[in-house]
Image 1 (cartoon, rainbow, N blue to C red):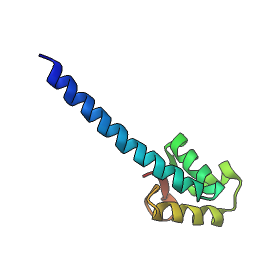
Image 2: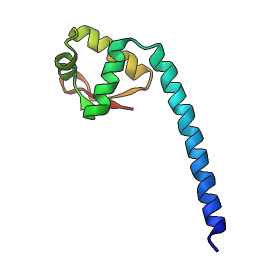
Image 3: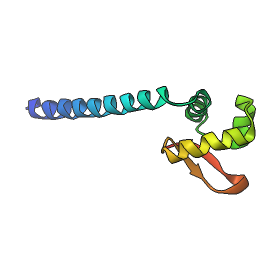
Length: 94
């Protein structure tokens, strides 16, 4: 009898869909308040997997210190994860 298993599976899928909808809505709200450069950084992180400050300067054409400030904010908001310190630091999606 497959019916109980199928019902359990469909309920689990429905719960997961609801959780993802909430997460997506939160992301939309955060992005609406986010500067354009921060949005670009998140898109590049999703596309490339991991990025350094130098790579972001090259990709965006923005000032190095401006990039660093945006990265600090994105890490503080737990949208990016920082790996390492100093010259070897790289960033990825949290």
